[in-house]
Length: 251
Image 1: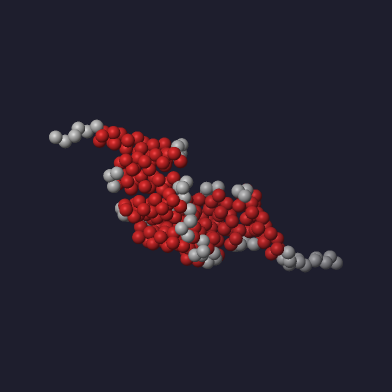
Image 2: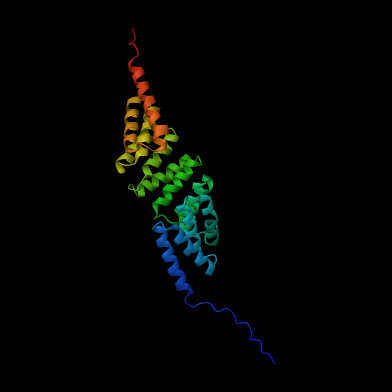
C-alpha cells in the first residue's frame, strides 16, 4: 500500500525579517551611492518576500527619480502611500515624481502632506512652496516659503524661490530684496542674479539689469538657458541702452 506524504505547509524563514532589514539597508546605501541597478534589485528582492513593504516600494520609486523617469516612479510610490499615507518620505517622493511629470496639483498635495508630517525637513516645505507657485497659488506659496526661510535661512534656494513668487505676483520691491538676500546666502545661486535682472528690467532700470545678467552669465556661460535666454537678453538690453544714449537731447 502506497502512502502519499501530506503536503507540508510552508514555514516562514525565522531569519527573513533580519534579511529584509539588511537588504533594505544595503539597497539604501546603493541608492545613495547612485548604484541604481543594484538598489532596484535589492528592493525587488524585498518585495518578492514581503509584498507591500513600504520602504521597498518607496525605494523603487526613488530609483526611478534618480533615473529621472518620473512617470515610472509614480506607480510604486502610489502603492507605498496607499499602504501608509503617514510616511513622509514616501509622500515627498511621490510629490517629486508628480513634479517631474508637471502635475503640479498632485505634487503640491503630496509635498504638502510630507511637510505637514515632517516639519524638521525644511526641504519638503521648500518643494511644497514651489509646487504651490506652479499651480498659481502665489499667496500660499509665499506664506510657506517665508516660513521655511525663517526656520532655516541657510536652506539652499529658499530665498530664490520666494523671490520668484514675489516677482510673479508683481511685488517688485519685495522680489528685489529677496533675490539680493538669495545672492548673499548662496553666492553661487546664479538664478538669483537672473531674478534680480528681471526685476530691474520690469522697473525700467536697464543698466542694473545688464549688470545682473552679466553676473549670471559669468557663472553660467554655456547652459541652454544661458545661450537661449540670458545672452540674447543681455545683448538686447545693451542695444537698448546704446540706442537710448545716442538719442539727440531735447531742444
